[in-house]
Length: 409
Image 1: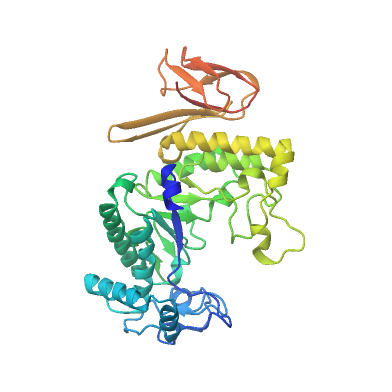
Image 2: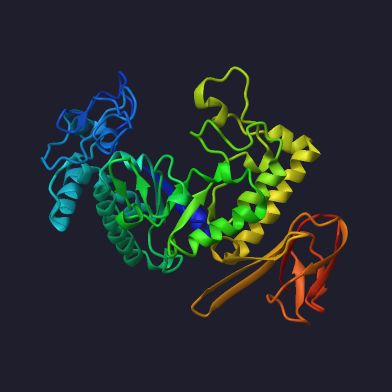
């Protein structure tokens, strides 16, 4: 999977969980009491009431704060011996603890097992789950070991290395919003997760911001990401696997959703079916089952409206991928009547600038380009494929669409 993805320039992030081992079943029995707690259940009123407790019932919580060294559970040893890999696994564990000097506490065993995916497969990042349910220093330790493993993998696999980008981490701190900047407030304690191992945090606020107009959203996010959150980012989403209040559950605003999500500063998460208007209201489902329904392949095959929605998302997504300025640049409004804005990004010798127009009339359009493109510059509308030349600070585009994605041709 990693090799196939890397061959196409796609990076792979896995989901990392340190705070729990999964629900207890007849097959997956509870871990020893020096590894996990089975109560009390979190009340989320304080830091301790969020970390030193079980997330929900029947989900034992790993004692990540424990400094007590522990032995491996008997059932894990038995499993490894049955599979004929006990000696190999023990040798690997012994090498890890010897090299790092970490004590054999629950969190470091789990950190070791998670970094094995980096050492063995060369994954590019982790989306860390239930982050606020452990002490923040757990994640600082985790990131450090991830970076060591990633550099080691690069050294051992020079022909497979994509570039010099470091290992990337995203934090799922439930209910964190971009308005909080670098801080998440537990009520009795404030924690900066960016200072404890994370490049990015999932932004639970975006689905509410998406109810506002384009300029309010874009200017707010540009200001935050080029201010308090400079050198960091947020991951925006409109629907998710475990958020029961998506922006557009009935998929009545799929074009608007794509425009707002894919043109917003920050990182954009496209949840499967966002791009094809897969309904999030499914009769007879319980809990989050509606969020995880079957992909609407038949609609995509037979429904022209669905095909057009997908094409819209594809055009925006490809434009975003081609131009780092869209997600990482500085936003500046050029014109309000026919809403037009620019995005500019520079890093070292690399520079990228685009102009985007929304809510234009279909047909003939005069698109103001501000100071982004000089007179005489050849430009192209990536949405329609039409080309133009800037004259008197404007580019004339005639297309069947109300959106313009302008780039230097």
